Length: 332
Image (cartoon, rainbow, N blue to C red):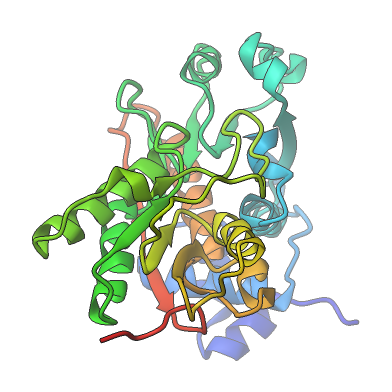
């Protein structure tokens, strides 16, 4: 396979090689929209920069709790893949650190991070606040991916989870559902809590109650492990908003054990549009979160932070889009 060059990327988009070089080297002179298009095209074509021209090769770290990284949903592994590809394209080096529950509890920061080897840290998936503060004390730039902490003012790249939770519930309301539950532990992550309160707003706005009997949790927030040993409510709603595809997948199996099917008896809508959502039976209706865009935004924010350490931290939102499949039934 021939090596992908900047000229090939320029020809694909119909622009000059100079513009491609500026976008991939983080130089000014092109619009944010064109920069993003060039970066995405470079990723798609498999471009890898060779680190020539004496450009500084920065060492960056990707830190993620094990309970988020090793689940079958591949949400964070996909983000890491695109972020690593972007680092390769721009001549940076990215190292991955998976923190297990005991290390997180004991505030055991990897020795390489403490030794000052890295110039910046990406943190993906909600990490314990004390552990986050331990990383902040290292004094190097940090960009949070898919979460935020109100007590720590840091750059972050997140989905508008409140709005997405609201939209997911509205989809069910538009299909005639009036008894709607929620699946997810709001104490686990800020994203789950935000999706839950978006769900609450949609119900309240429609004059419907938020029934605690229909708020269920089917995973262990400490380990991220999902279970089929779920006590279903005696009276079930006609639909559930599930905080992610994996939660919906396990709920679907729990319903099947009880002799119920989706969407005939219970409709489901979830989030993330992972591979799992396409392989369930029936396929899940879900909100796609653009993981490639999250990775690119995180990289660009890190480069901006390394260039200007004194600037105000930014909170950057990535949109989601609804993918309609087979798990929602329209009722009268």
